[in-house]
Image (tube, rainbow over the protein chains, first blue to last red):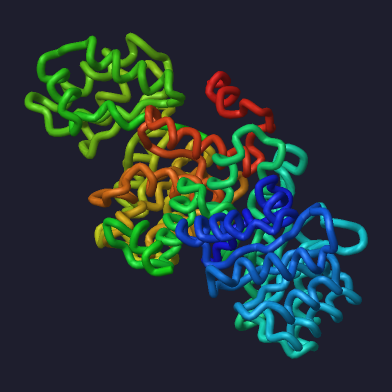
Length: 263
Length: 263
């Protein structure tokens, strides 16, 4: 399972201040904590910080690269910032993200091939997130087709079927799981599947509980990765146990520590 | 979700002693604790107690009935004890259990119809538990056919696809979930699905963690009930959250308490 640590994001106040004050120690600490807790990759998002987005992003990448050679998941909606960031990034690269419109897919799949990056593609188009399974599956098919046309390796493609908060979209969890099951059959090898986990519990009270139970369920449907808080120990244990139960790890009594030691 | 409290079982030392000493207070306390914690039904198993099994069972049923009118899940491998127990039980009755051999199914489905009881049928035959999905599905089909022939209401039928300990049968969790998914499509209305949950983690170290993560995964595959320890609060929260995410409950901030209050 690809655990992408979600905390290096300017939405969090300590990170925003660190970016604005160019305080490397804070960023190093946040990155190291996620990695020590089991993150395989780090999401890198400057968020709503003051200053030029490209400059902030390049500083953030450089700073994080000082403490890790793990994959950086470059998270920006701006194509020009993404281009600059991928050029500056020496670690393995994951583009976060493209939408499923033809125009965006062509641009981003070409960029992924050109920069030898993996790519996250959301099942969102100009009309938004589909309200059903079929819409997600149709967009997933478009994503795979466009990635093939661009010459991408399909195992480098992560489809994000977009989980919405359960308090406003109660059918969302079932739709996402069923979309994953159906899209897994679409090509051989199949694309991978990833979600931005904390969305499922946004504005809910029991965020941690909902996150970890949905993660376990989604892993049983075939989920390959999540952008999540690796330092939430209960969440990591849920993920590792779900993978054990899906036979992605051999049982031993201390399978949780064994998983973490293997990162 | 049908939560069947697992603790009234002579395998637990305090229960065995209470049965042997005819100590009603202990049994009342164990029963009340399971129900207060959210159990919808109580498994009733005399286990390896001294004395005549029928006498012990009848005493246990009478004692539990003094404190609850919830369903009693009569758990004995002996057909004559089961017959006596069902006659003595005034609460709603669930037979636990029949195997999937033709002979046993005919006997137990007839008994279920005769005594107006629901029935748990295990996907086990003379050769044991199938090592794959297909074997479980084939036995499930036999179970449904025999129940129909006996005139049982199919919603009164609980198929138990038999989860084995993950440390000896690593493919078991996937097989059980896939068997449930396939068997759900077998009839309309479908039978229900139930497991003896704690089996999945038998002899494992992280029993509670494995139990609750597998329960959440199995609920997402269509599980309707489990024999489990209702007093394990983390386990109940996992079950309730999984049901929320499967849209079996309407969201509110205190959905866990709301579920428990509704029992």
